[in-house]
Image 1 (tube, one colour):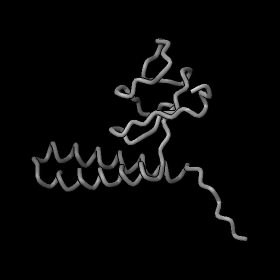
Image 2: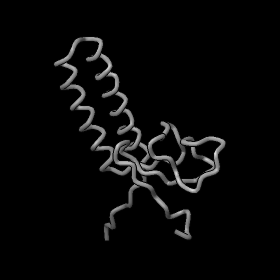
Image 3: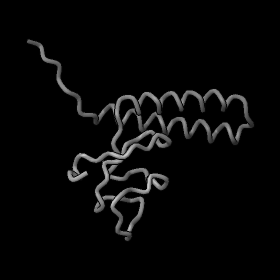
Length: 106
């Protein structure tokens, strides 16, 4: 707990981790807190961290939404498909910007 750079907060509902730094936090602007408000995560927050597993879960959730979209009236189905596309976009962004360890070829 003494090393703030090593603290990660899990937010399984939003499929992300929070590497909480007060100066970047969007979950409570103007309020000094020592920990994040995980129920108020904001897209675009600089504290958001995702793993490859989170990206896979985002795609799984998107697939579920697409299947449900076929079973509901069009306006709701359109919203499901739009949300599914947003989740896939987040997963794609993770894939494009992730930091991966290089495999040792020796």
